[in-house]
Length: 251
Image 1 (cartoon, rainbow, N blue to C red):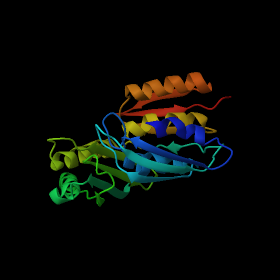
Image 2: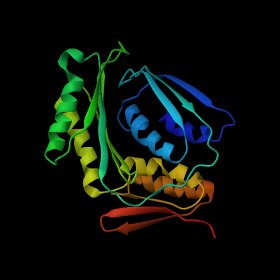
Image 3: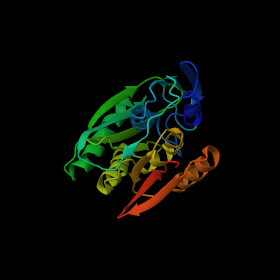
Image 4: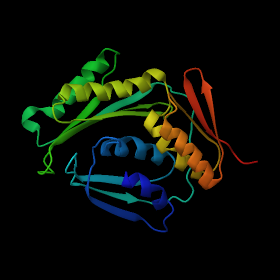
């Protein structure tokens, strides 16, 4: 959450910015997993011209945290607009399944297997990287993120985290379900990416638009707040079962 707060500021720095964060939670409730940030949000921001490099040194889970990450950000005072109006066809379907000090129980592998078992019902299969992590001896845990990129540069993610007495198979299925909801809706960004993109779209020059399957409270709040702070205007239209988010261009 700290990275989400400071990243837009870093885009307007005079020089490259290096940030090193310690003792935090990388994979916890009520926030995106660190690998979602790395493989979904930061990849979409790369399309808008914001170049970053995120490294995970230690994974951190509830309740002890103790995670450690670093990020390099290249200044980008002129963000590109984002026009993503068509779902297209899936080009890449990938994922990262992580467990920390749970290798003997095959947690990361079981998460990945369960995710692909669910996706197989819909004729899909993800190339999932398995990480048996030993970076944080103070806190065991796990997570799984999946993402789909299409030939129109739509990007959709879905993640889930492990917790005490939550089987690895449930984590895998949950992440796969979260991703498939987005794919089935044929949105161009997932419901979480939709609200995270708002400040960057507000800062970018020119007209931007994308499609999301749901208007969350976070999205509504970010649209309202970005309009107030930046003096820009957004328009929301429902197109069949999707919501089109448009940043209007000043005349």
